[in-house]
Length: 199
Image (cartoon, rainbow, N blue to C red):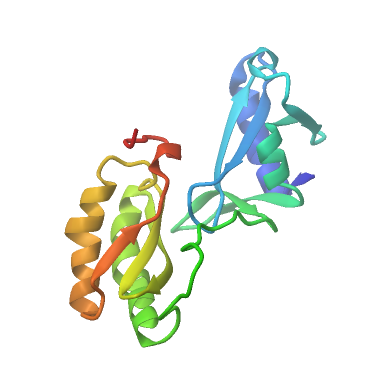
């Protein structure tokens, strides 16, 4: 179901060896966050911290614990570890992708073309690099009737400042660069984020 490269396996074993007699397993979670990629988390847990519905997989050197949803999301995935100057850490190669929120039914306009390209370029070159420092990311879902539809992920998903970021930063900048845009809509369900602020 899920495999580890030799580099990733050695990194996990190094952490387990520091547990002073404890023999923990590795819990991996792959959850949706409103974007086109899963959000991954890994932590060591003991047997008494497992849930009855958890699936336990023997990786050879340590057990891997998956909740039912993550088990489905991680089918065929590979966990790697890279050690580079700009990025060091675990990396997931996952053939599965979450279902990205859509704009709903009905006729759609301006989903392609110059406006779409300019908004996407602005996200790629300016907005996402700026909020990446806070662990956030914004995805363009589409444009319909002069409205841009976005979804927030990473640190912006469930963040109490997401609405301020959207209205005072992102929306203002998009309107400056693409004047034909009249409104920017956040489609993210922030109640499912790590710090939900919508009730």
